[in-house]
Length: 160
Image: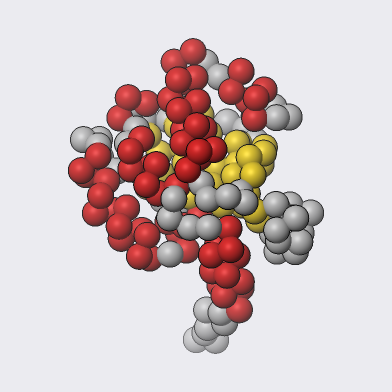
């Protein structure tokens, strides 16, 4: 569900009561533990933590008016989601997360490329997410992002 909230404060104020506490706890984790330089703002109808244009003027390559995204959190209809770019773009962090997750949650991991879905708010692995938040600085994320942009595209094959 995409929120029409203009600010993160509006977003959190509009959450259903059963989602407020876990979502606010996620917010506190990212505000406290993300390395200096990331900023909180609304992005794509979710609360996002981004590399602002003041640190990375080119912004997101698909829409340079947008800052470079890093993490987003959202309260969806049936789950709480966390989109963490480090999980998609950095295999060593993904491998660490996959190995650590069972130590922090009894819930089955429900994950896409960078999206982790938590169907039961009480099963959120807050300690693991706290450690994940510390894993990459804005400068490291910019370097990884730029390296990914320079990689050649997947080869195309002629029709047979």
